[in-house]
Length: 365
Image (cartoon, rainbow, N blue to C red; front, side, top):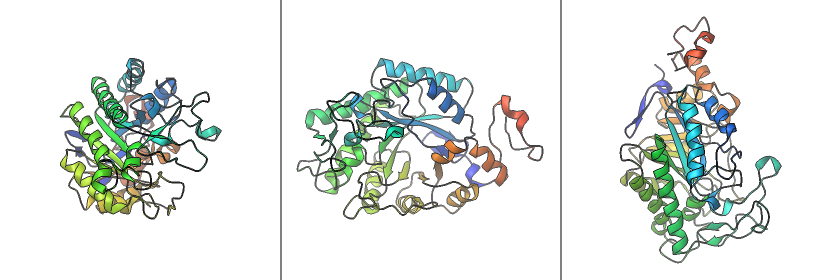
């Protein structure tokens, strides 16, 4: 059996294989509520045969959305909309479903990516005042965020707690906390965006403080038998910024607090980033973190070929791989990978008759 298609446990949750569908923003929500687009989009991905489906970055407070069309989980309306989507998925797929809880911080209040994605001014339609660790804008010419004070920190923390409780009520199998890609928790971690002089800035211990408080709050609010994980950027790819050595210390602190897995990405904090993009370019970051912790590690980033994914798992660079653009392009990637590597994958009864004649053991049914 190829390693990619062997089961793995994340805390008390067992996945059928090592393929994770990464959270991918669709910019198709209305007032934070998921729509029919998400029924179609997530329902399609739930038929892919992957081991875990992660719902897109979901804001824990309205101003934490990346754009006005982003998903949220902060009131009864957003919870009800997500519940309808989940019910549709679960009627036809046994795939475990996770959610990524997030706050965009200074990278919030933007327009849709297909119309440019520029920041929207606080006083313009569909815009609002952003917040961050410090009052530093993401890029020159953008509106500066407001530095979170004690009350603001408590509001964000409470938002994570309430979203975790709503996730539990909805039967979500796993919560992933978003501390990557230059969003709020990453903004606290990186010295490039965190210039605070209080207990939440300066030293690495202080810069980790609020992200760890957010993790502790979610872990306490989400059922103990369901895992909480974290996605982080292993490096800013900017000199003097967040790097792999600091990431390792953060991951060790998370593991000590009960984090069930680490999802390793990179970048997103600064427009000055210089990313050496290529196949598996982020896997060395996952490898370094896996060597430092005892919990499962997920690798992501230009993983496109079945043999490439199998090599990442087989050599021990990571325990799982996550697919984003790759699985948007090919929503049946796990089927095709199983066919190529000689493994089996779950398929719904309605699809069993499309199994190729030469692959009689491809579908588990």
